[in-house]
Amino acid sequence: MKAAVTGAAGFVGKHLVERLVKDGHEVSVTDHPRCCFDDFKAIGARVFPVDLCGKDGPEECFQGAEVVFHVAALASPWGKRERFWSVNVGGTDHVIRACRQAGVRRLVAVSSTSAVFDGHTHHVRADESLPYPTKFLSPYSETKSVAEQHVLAANGPDLETVAIRPHLIWGPRDRTFLARLRMHAQAGPIYHIGGGATETDTTYVDNLVDALLLAAKSDRAPGNAYFITNGEAIRYGEFMDRFLEILELPGARGSIPKWLAYGAGAVCEVIWNLFRIQREPMLTRYKVAELIYTHTYKIDRARNDLGYQPRVSNEEGFKRLAAWVKGGGLAEA
Image (tube, rainbow, N blue to C red; front, side, top):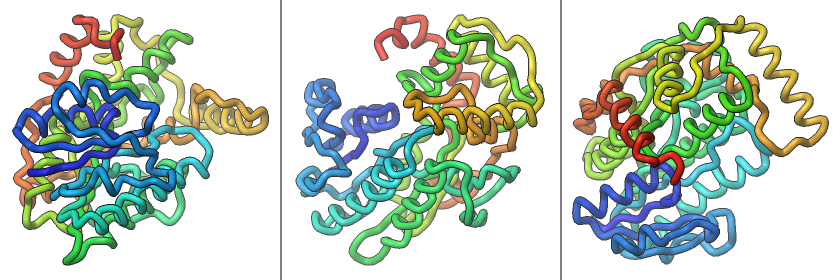
């Protein structure tokens, strides 16, 4: 298979590219020109530095590709709405156009469960019949929802499209979840919200890569969105405690009420907007909502259509992550 990957320099992108090369596929990669591409050159991938929001698109990168994996996105609980729209929606539209111009057979986009999360509703064993919200708590959710809808609407005889919706991606070389948790722990004590009792599904990065590769070849995939998780719900409190233990950081000191955390997030947003503070707030309403609302999803459609089966369990994932951290991986990330 000849494949192209956007957002290749990111956490998921690197894992995906390495798997594709390992499996013997011919791979082209693209990401922002500021990224380092040395590792990709070393393993034989063709490199095309491109800003998806710029006028020069990824058409050259996509030439000859049978499948494009669109991984690039702005994933953050905080930021300017215009930037989210430019990257997540504008960038996705650019990718769709470039796929058509290059004659790509299939586009597999990494979406998110956030695409169907309004910030105020529990997702309890939800399936893909869950409707798109009309209102959102964050521009990230809003733009991931719009981008996914654009991807699926583009499905047709000239371009097959698929959307993969993971929840809470984690694993070795993570620069997002691990970095935020370490930053918060170093800034002060960690507290669970509502006792950390809310249930969530999570997605180990190798399981997500499996799903992406399966979506690239399944005849039943085009035009569909798929929830992808480890298939093992876990309490947020337990999940966070395991990460703190792996990072050798102090455990949670206690718990704060959900209403208090949500109110604090709202206050932070007001202050950050008022004083135009650039760094990410410690709390936002969206961050708190992710922790206080249930996020568990059925993966039956992925099992049936894609043949997806989570290979890495939560426990095995924790072991792999701990080994990576102990080996100095976090310092290099």
